[in-house]
Image 1: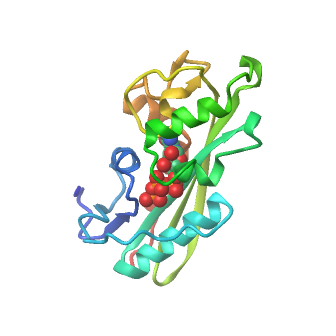
Image 2 (image 1 turned 135 degrees about the horizontal axis):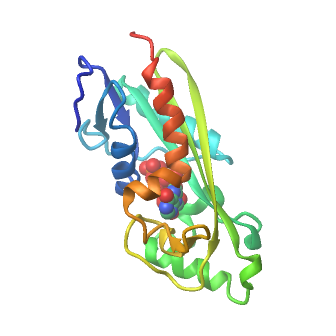
Length: 206
Ligand code: ITT
């Protein structure tokens, strides 16, 4: 996928979500590893996310895909917590509503479930926990959070998932209205990836 003078050391970005993958490839472009994907490794298995926290699920995914491939592996578990919904959809963000929904359907459901919620009670945050695992190491985790407000209507066609309704008050724009580099510089995933990149810069040779 990418190569940057890494002398053959590979890092698997273990996600089936294309939006996440695009962001990680940009965020981790300077780490001293060649980045590879599940697609490139021929891995189509979906690991079951049986945890109840972002941290548990991130570790479950990173460990499972590193066992499957033997590679140093990074996975994230992330999602949207909406205060007016008691923190939902949270760890179930990708599975909110019925199985058949796509991103747009989940955004519609979210707005439906928030109808009547006034502006001052529409606070929310994206959370991301990244886990790094390899067959011979204890998993390591790092995390990031970004605060926002759930807009009444979707706006923007960048990003993925709930980005079209996630307003960054300091920008006056949703995360779907920002160029990817700008979203990455502020986002939950961007913050967690910066911490991960710092770990990778000093990663011991195996
Ligand atoms: P993998 O498990 O294969 O990585 P996934 O999409 O199932 O893919 P998660 O279980 O971590 O990943 O669910 C994350 C969901 O949270 C994602 O599908 C979106 O609905 C939402 N989400 C996370 N980060 C987001 C972001 O930056 N922008 C918009 N929505 C986001």
